[in-house]
Length: 280
Image 1 (cartoon, rainbow, N blue to C red):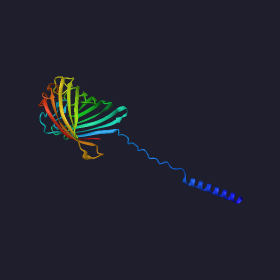
Image 2 (spheres, helix red, strand yellow):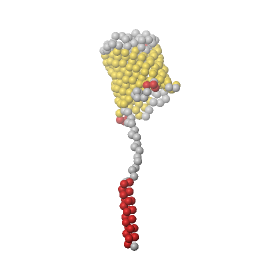
Image 3 (cartoon, one colour):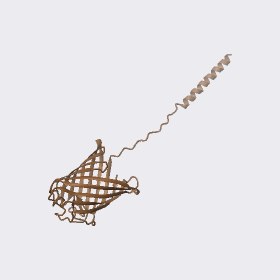
Image 4 (cartoon, rainbow, N blue to C red):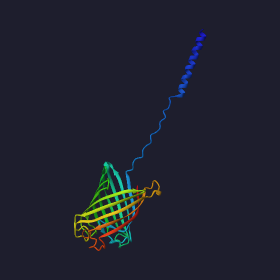
């Protein structure tokens, strides 16, 4: 009887030891988790590059090179604008625009007739935006200085108002003053092509803004048609490229914009443009 009890006790002890050993070897089960993907931070930097050929250089209604109805002999106008998103819906802006042609001897060098640079701030709230830019236009051994305020509302017809203030006439031949430019634009897509019809009307608050101007009031109106085709063959990672171009018809008051008194051949004229652009 004692042997049976002893044997039973030994078997129980052995079974307990084996179970404890197995539990020790197995350990606690591991929890398998799938890591959550980390979203890429949204870029705070963007910009636009445009390489355009224009039949005319029109500066606030004035046909600068006096091309009139002539669409030949275009001028090359590259431009670049950079934008940095700031806190509280502000944007820092830095840009440049060049005028390159051989129409007259250049005061800068080669065929480079003008270099414009600007900097400023933009602010947006919903569909409304306001932009303030300080600009320097270098040409003719002078420096014309501009302060522009632009108001825009992103809705049907995209209404806008630009308050253009010249604070130093530089080599313009005119005087300091203010021009108000009101605009609307209607656009739609025709397949991959984006088509728009911009309309602008300008009112001059001063009678001697341009060289040769003798009156204030309505200075010019312009109606255009433009088209843009995405260049998808460029591939991803190189920005959003497009081919764009269009026509704009100007109706001017020569007593306000000074086209005829300063030797420009026409009050009303058609302009054309074509180029490629990139948004990044």
